[in-house]
Length: 161
Image (cartoon, rainbow, N blue to C red):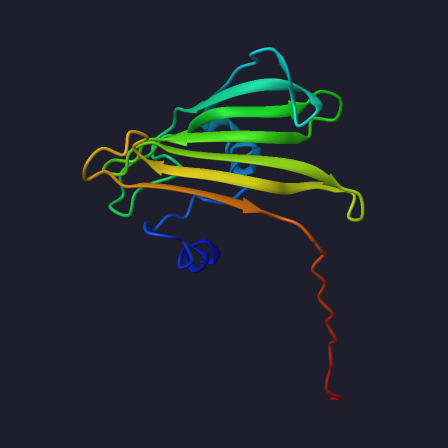
C-alpha cells in the first residue's frame, strides 16, 4: 500500500519498484534462494573497498510483476563493503514487457547521527536509450538527506473493573 501510494507522484509511468531500498529485499533471508549470486571480484565504490556481487532472479513467479501479472525478473549488481558487509551501492536492471529497459541505481552512506547506512541517492531510467520515434524515456534522480528516527509513544489506559 505504501508503494502504491508513493507511485502517485511518479512522472509519466506508474511504477512501484523505484525505491532506493529495493535491493535490500533481494538480500533478505526469505528471498536469497530466489536469486543466483556470484562474487565478481573487488571494486572501490563511493570511496569504499567493496566486493562486487552480480545477481539474477531465477525463481517464478518473480518478486516484481507487471500490472497484468507478467513476471519481470530482476538482475543487477551489488557492492558490499568488505569489512562489515554493508550495502554501499546497488544497480537493478529489468526489462518489463512494453516498457523497455529499466535501471535503478542507489548509493548509500553512513549516517553518523543514527549510526546506520542509509540511501543517499537513487538514479532511475525507464525506456529506450535511443529515444527513437514513439519511444518514451524517463530519467530521474532522487537525493535523500536529513534522516530522522521515527518514534511512537503509546499509553495504555485500562478501565477499572
